[in-house]
Every structure is written in structure tokens, then in C-alpha cells.
Image 1 (cartoon, helix red, strand yellow):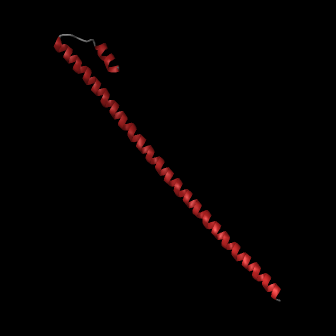
Image 2: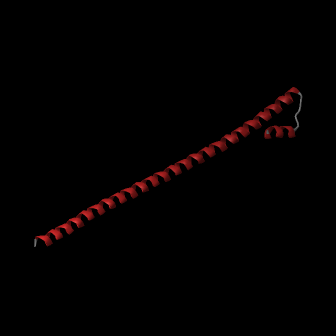
Image 3: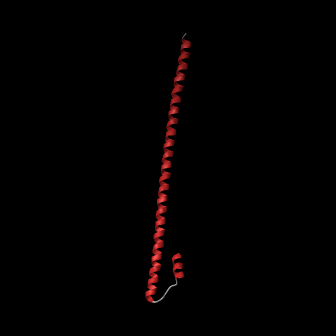
Length: 101
């Protein structure tokens, strides 16, 4: 009789320990997937922030380009007014060439 009881006890012990190992592995898998999903979410957020920064920088660059163009036009107009005051005239085509440069 003691031998069958020992075998039953041994089988139960193996079943319980294996289930504990399975639970640990499942817990580690769940933890790993939650870490991965958190990292992916953070990655997506970072990419979205980078995209927003790039768009705002592009808008600022466009505004600066407009300001530079306006200042160049004003400079050409000022040069034209100075030349009229000094008695020399600059053809309109030369002014547009200066603006393009």
C-alpha cells in the first residue's frame, strides 16, 4: 500500500509544480507583452510629437521666407526711391532681377 500512495503523491507533486511553472511563464509572457505594448505606445507618441514639431518648423520657415521676400521687395523699393532722389533711374527689369537674386 505505501508504494501506490507514494506514486500518487509523486504524480500530484509533479502536477502542482508544473502548473506553478506554467503560471510563472504565463505571468512573464503577459508582463513582456504589456511592456512591449507600452513601449510601442510611447514610440507612437514620440513619432507624433516629432511630426508636430516638424510641421510647426516648416510653418515657421515658410513665414520667415515670406518675411525675407517682403524685406527684399522693400529694399528694392528703397533703392528705387534713392535713385529717383539722386536723379538716376533703374529700369523695372533690373529691380525684378535684384529681387530674384
